[in-house]
Length: 463
Image (tube, rainbow, N blue to C red; front, side, top):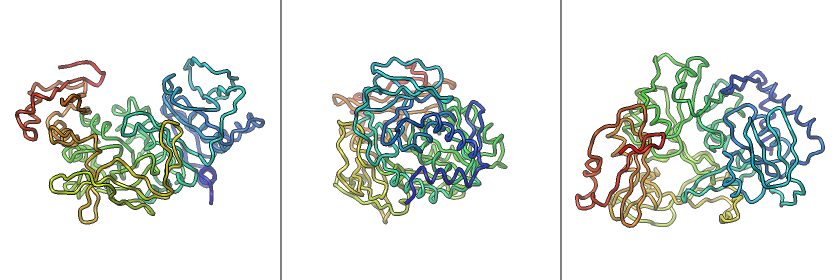
């Protein structure tokens, strides 16, 4: 069976005239990308990369990042892309080298030698004696249920199967030009989008995610973009900024929506602003591939959108209910288990439990099964027992009432429900009794146990 690098190498040769463009306006054909990787090999003939971990400081979606990432992958090493901080580095139990990019200054507390390249510097540990990363090709990061950082290890075979299944599910071909709107340290952006298009031979544009809301439409028009991938937060940002396509005569074939819950009202507003032939709402977790299922919604069928539906599992993937949790509107709720050939092979973090299953991931996601279709309602931490309401219901109530709303964060503490509303700084904040928005779902006697705080997107307190 071919390795991930072998498949990438084959695509670079086969699709030599396809290209990658980054937000610095640096453009490179697949053939030239391969030459850059070969040049790096000449620089590091005496260095052994095999089964060693390289931590790369994320400084944007750049071609420099891609060249170094693919070079290390070819040499048998493994790259973990993170936004560098001493705290993040402290959570990584061991690594062989730290890769710096741009003009970032690092304060390090380990003895190292510096190997310079045109694309970044490698700070290589001296007297390195840590254990090798056996059967690990890709490491993905995830906040997980507990919101603590987890580093999830995948073999070349598992990640490759997931990429190929994703390509088939989204019908990605060499004719596609994709716009990467999200940071490449997101597994959704790295695996589901970047690697899926790289192996398919498509053109790839790496945007500056911090400014994508302002530049999205111009990118689509200038480069004839056929698809882009976004999260619920970015979708709501586009709505809050009133970003929309200027014409129905455009190049887009589909938009992929992943990374969390999107209510029906938000989806319908978005589809009016971005009318495309199809939308793919995707479900996944980093431990299972990371992609698991796909829900395709044709534009003509948008009114029938089911926000909680997980979609059709990828090929060779199956879903099943596990431990019973509770009932919800007379439906039995269970934990979800995923059977997949792309199951992870453990956590890099020593504090995390190792994976005990050869082909199954037991999740904390709660679902019900209706007519053979799985619907997700959240995790057990998303149900606020004293108020008898789910987090997704709170989101629907507020997003349907506040057009400038970007994000809703809710938590329960000491029997009080705290709700943080993050709104766009570009729009006028509505004057309203926010508790009244909840009154249709929460008994009046419970409303005084709820504290609602309003912030703008720059973290400034508003009300």
